[in-house]
Length: 406
Image 1 (spheres, helix red, strand yellow):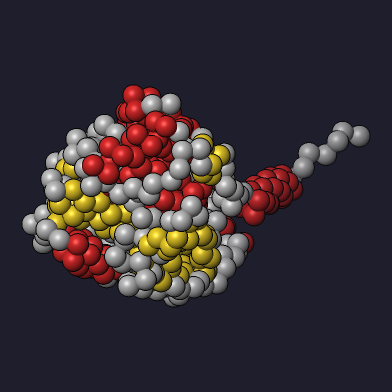
Image 2 (cartoon, rainbow, N blue to C red):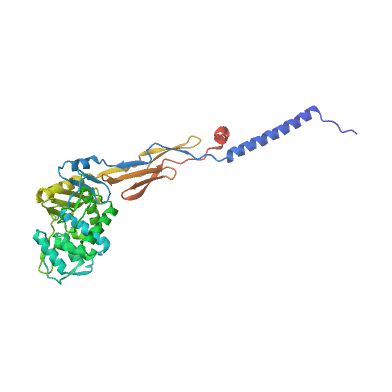
């Protein structure tokens, strides 16, 4: 018998079922695609400045220095900035001795706590000593043949400012004055001390000159050397050979809280000079400040001006809030409109002095704030007010443009 042909109704049912299967398949594929397609990362929008630089106004320091009519300069031990009211080179007098011992320490370092090599006082030393005494230089005569340690030579050169021992020290290290002068010239060039000229080691030659700003830099180098820093902060010391107790010529040692040196100087041409330093605690941060005054009319004048500048510099540090707990930083927004506020997790203060900077950088993705400043690097957590959830399937199904057209 012939195969019966399907009726029209049957054919329509088959087509409908096929179309339904296609639709179901397409819908299933769409649902699967919507469910599986990765969503983009949430958008981070910082509203706080990043990076942000914190600093302290320098004008008050410059104003303080500018208030003096004679050459003056100030700076911090830990730093590079110097504020001065005069760029000219001036006679150093016995501040020269700081240069002498710094150059000597570089050539033949004396270790902390050591006495160092022994120098035998020679006929040449005695001859130089007599010549210095004739021009009113500070000298402590000792017999020829006396053995003197390196520590004793440095102590006499820096504490009572002995010109004879400063010269003997320089010659013992460099052979003679020419060798010493050549070493100073090379050292000054490497240290960037453009104004410094030294003709002999004691300071009696008024051709030994430098700017007040460079003297601040020289004082920094001296205080950074533990051996020299210890000596220049010593108020008095007892020496052998009948010399007895000698006192430091620095008028601020023992008279000003925190004073730690560094060197006086005086000749008729130079006037009265003083490089002074003092330490103190400023909002729990230990700082050493340096002041240099040149060409004053009296010992009292140099002490007064140096003390005043150190005190004025002590007013310059400021405590700044570089991060505050709850401080709004920005927000994170997901593709489906979820929003999370970002804020600093804790309060952090920093004590800055003029010339210093602290940089704050925010990495919201890493939930981290990085503070980079004089004390090094510190991290502060970023607080997220909630968390981002995956978009719902319903949202995915109804937002194909956001999912597929990006």
